[in-house]
Image (cartoon, rainbow, N blue to C red; front, side, top):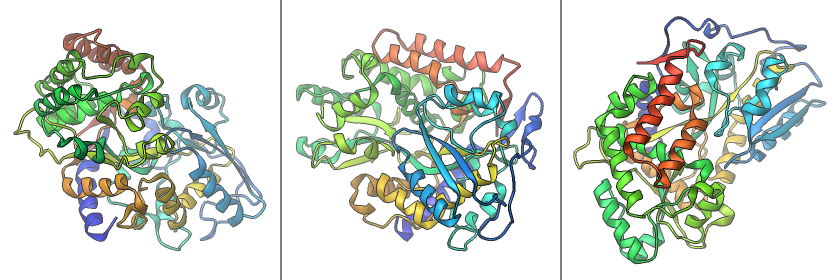
Amino acid sequence: MNVQHQSVGRRGFLRGALAAAVLVPMGGTIASCAAGGGGTTTGPTGTVSDTNPFGMAEKATLDAVIFKGGYGIDYVEFAGKIFEKTHEGSTAKISPSTDIAQELQPRFVGGNPPDLIDNSGAKAIGFSTILAQLEDLTPLVEAKNLEGKVIKDTLYTGVLAPGTFDGKLAALNYVLTVFAMWYSDSLLKENGWTVPKTWDEMYALGEQAKAKGKYLFVWGKEAATYYQEMAIASAIKEGGDEVRLGLENLTADSWSHPAIQSVFTALDKIVKAGFFKPGGSGTQFTAAQAQWSNAQEAVFYPSGSWIENEMKDQTKSGFNMMGAPVPTATASPKMPYTALHSAAGEPFIVPSQGKNAAGGKELLRIMLSKEAATNFAKTKLAPTIVKDTVPADGFGSTALVSQTKLLGDAGEDIFTWNFVDLYGTNKDQLVVWNSFLDGKSDVATLTSALQNITDKVRNDSSVKKIEVK
């Protein structure tokens, strides 16, 4: 990013991330969230120094499990090689996972979790269930990076907020994710189309696209909730903070908010008009994405900024991928059209009971070095939370340049939410959204089903609740 856009982006994250993540417990305290950490670190310790700030033992073995999604795991392997070079005789074992919850919950129960986890993906572990077992990562961001700079001073403002619960930095979200409606700039120019700013304009474009034998949208079964993300973002722009806070705090009838209903109604009209490519609930999500990025059967696709890297081998030459803000329901929303859902994502956690928790923090420290962060941006075409690692030309990526522009245009109007990840509801919501996008339900059914999922969490006394203010 160039200097001008860095400055604008930082102000936006300060407003959006902090507004979304000032978290306090609901209905009692979360005893595990004391600032001192949430458990006893086990395993041997070594000498503390600037090059070993967490006292990792010499010739230690590190066990890291990384979600293998759109970003792969090679960026962690890159840092792992630096880890092994920096700590001669130590070994970094980096293992992939596509189902973090199923694979690692038994290890948490058994008291032998990995030393570092990328708790991401549709099947991540709900944070409310493991907060007590996670290290406070404040010492990590207060330590110096490989270049000798204090880590927290090298990060974008506000990016620590999404992983902070009741004053405890329980997760370090590594990637600066921009959520947008992605499209081929060359396809739009070829057809003389412009990006719709309202749902009415989107419907009108759907008719034009249909005349050219194309759909507006496509989806895959594992990613149906990408359209939930798009709908929530649109509704927050339309109705303001009260929409976001209602969902975050599991409020009764929160899904019935007029702004949400207006977006659901607009989507239902698009589904009923046949502007979604049929069969998505039976299509693997990357195959569906290829229908958009390679075959160009659909015009738009809502996703996080991992999409370019995820589909880099299945994107048509000359596609010129770019992102746009999601539409609003009316021409006079409470937040401007340019407002944006963006947040630090890919939450890395260090379990206190890991055999080498100090090693988990050390690998994260290395990942936050300029060398490792620049490698990520260059190879994944997405920025990390570390500043000054992306050049103005975006390493030749139109999508990365587009992200910079989106952040700059949004200014301080940047927001995020955490309730889906916090309470692990995505799995249940996938079923609901697949049915809706298939045209097998309506707005009332969608609303009721989503509210039932929210109510189930709210009424479950065994689930620790987090209030968002």
